[in-house]
Image (tube, rainbow, N blue to C red; front, top):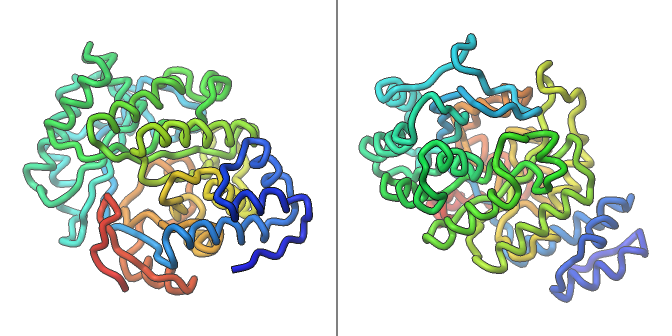
Length: 364
């Protein structure tokens, strides 16, 4: 496919992309600044097609938040509650199993588990959550606990982060989700999530996990106080770690959801920014196989558009997503498999149902 450029200043970047050369942060800034968004899209689409053809992946999964009690006070969060606050909850084993059974169908292949940093319960609670699910649903992959949660578990247990991960793996952990990364610069973290893991700690958790044989996920929460350069620094830090470990499976740009009054942010990201960020992610993260368009945050129709902007994954059915919705996501809390297949086919792509590790379950 030939790429026709309207903005001639992008010629050098086009040449790098077509020759498989790594883009710099300065290149990324130029891609953010150009008005020629369609050229950025064409380049990203070409890179994605080289990696994935016209396949677009999704999974049947269930989202579980065992507790919303949290010691941290992140500026963007509408999900957390303090101990004893109205709406605070911590599921026990019976409640956890009821939550799952009420939403269960036999096609679900993955539990996606994220919760608050609840220091009212011991580390054993988080281990038992995995053990209980593995005991009753051994066919499901457990994708549980962000890098920030792993650092929190280390603090409350007195174990090293490696020891925490080893205990979780023994309990049945299969992979880490990508959350807790937010923006991987200390300026951002000092303002937006000061009580959570530092940039270096988040990266260290995933490097340790990769060393223990886990394949993991990576996210970026954009659309608040970060600069475009900080977004690119974030991508660069991820690809440097990926150079060392090859442990990341996918990168997920997450658009900020600022509807809730206590979120402190009043504006949503624009459709242009969402599509541009997905495309730039595809171009910058040359050593990642997949870029995910997260329909929960940007909506199904923009997700469909993103499939021509470098994305090869649209996430999953989710059943009932809470964290983005508590902050103000306007989408539904789940989509059916047939809806996801229809969405992908509408973009003239091939829907591929996958497992957690991108093994093909069924092609539609």
